Image 1 (cartoon, one colour):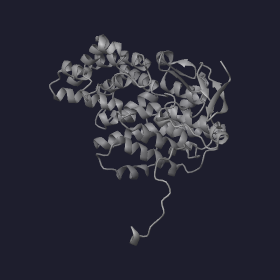
Image 2 (cartoon, helix red, strand yellow):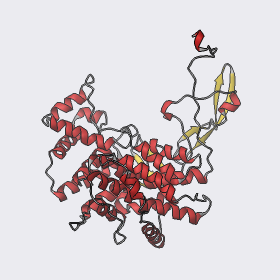
Image 3 (cartoon, rainbow, N blue to C red):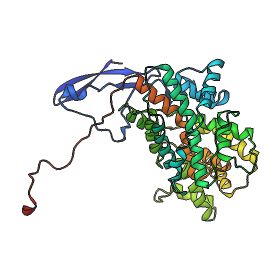
Length: 428
């Protein structure tokens, strides 16, 4: 294969270098396109064909159903590792030694306290405020309590800032839930591990002893691992482009939270439950909705099936399906909504229509089932997604800053009015 690509316009040829990734991906480097052609740009709505950066963090092959963090297969990490260890891997590029992990966990715990004045900000929200709006605002507010800019080249400063972020965001996420329910806020329990602590902060109430279920702990641990990073998706690219202006980590992550909030991104698992609830309200006739999904003239769409990136079975769904089954069996839940989900899953895995089109249940389908089984309110699903994606956002922000990437500045193709002479109001 040639090392250059040739673009010909009006008989004039321009050469651009071809860059190859370690997994065989090929890209045309067009960063000098505008300068060498006298102003020519590419038009790519949604950036579906545009690489905004090079990255060493995540490899994704949607055709083959492959997802790897720093070269490690997601399946192996989910089976043998834990969320905090995977967080260390994506951020610091290698799996930690025992000593490194011990220090990492200990340092995170040392930053678990939240300034009490943050409660004043929380009190300003109405009880029915969406938890994602609360989380985004509180994450941004952390900047006020940590005003000093992090010296990117200083490894120790970066390390402390990363541990501080990983420590505080789960606390704020649990506060968003408690605010929604009108319950008192919980603080971090440093006697528990990272996942156990998240569950206790979310569900413990002062009048009862909270008992941790190891099946639930394992399921949440795996679910968060599956969400750690997913290449240059909407929220991740938002974190990078905001950070490219040299905005701080808290401000950049707050922007990522807002991007994740959208129903086309992080809100997909919430949409799954809302769809199941609407089917239940209509009598729970699964067959009726299967037929609606097959009818091209019907606007109804099955949420949580298929994926815009994966053209095969979502590798994350393959992993978490087992945990979903274990959680439902362990908790012994009888929920008509979850029964409808089981029926839909069975049809999608066996019906030729879905198999032929590769409309398999995806990670959003199973994560929605697990979160509902755990008693997490639907509006909190995207907050849980944000907790899982947090290490990926940090890793992407850190990589972008260390690479000294230029400020993000997309171009546009203007299609508005040409020059028009201004007329005073009397002449209009």
